[in-house]
Structures are given as C-alpha cells and as structure tokens.
Length: 145
Image (cartoon, rainbow, N blue to C red; front, side, top):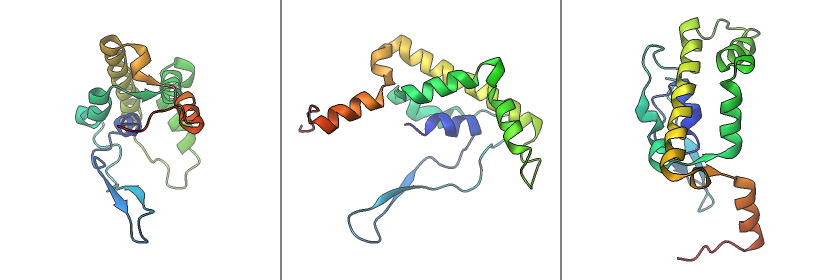
C-alpha cells in the first residue's frame, strides 16, 4: 500500500505484485519486480495502480507531507523532476507531457487520500509510523490474535 503513491505518479503499470526471495533459507526479503514500464503513457492515468491506496485507505504521514509539498507551486513535482534530470547523461529522460502527467497524477493521489479521510477520518488514514513503531518497540502493541 505504501508504494502506491510513487507508482501512481510514475504511471508504473507493471509492478502490481512482489516476490519473496528465500534462496538462502527463511530469512528472505521482498523483491518488487519492475519491467521498465515506468511513466507509461503520458495521456493515460491508470487508476488501478492506486487500488491499494483507495482500498486500504492508509498512507504514511511523512509520505503525505512530501506529496502535499510537491503539489505546491514552488516545489511542483514536474519542476523538481525536470531539474533533477537535467544533469543526466541520457537527457532528456522524460518528455514535457510525461513531466506534466506527474503533476496531474499527484492531484489524483491527493484526491484519493482526501476521499479516504472524508470516509474514514484522518486518524485511521494517516499512519504516524514513528509512534506506531515506538509502541511495537516498547511492547505496548498487542500482536497476538
């Protein structure tokens, strides 16, 4: 669910699942597969990418704050990305329509979060991870079901 905002802005339509790497025993780790379809078509916003966000209605507070910042005129996502990519040896990496799609998709993500907050309340939607993590670390969280 926490990857949905970044996948949604990039229009990454190929990373809807993950694999568990357990080659060396039980201590495995997640691998998110990517088949290089990031940024997709600039003219199409694949809303299904946001399904984890819209269905679970949960987002990290820090992620939401970053997204809100990137939606402001002074820090617009397309401008930040454009400037970041200027120095790349393969420039131009993204065409202008792709950069503008980032801003449009960001607005869709923020609207999705807003709809979740309206439906479920800010307390249930915005995960303040450090507070939750400290509860886990102190043993206050009840992990038995």
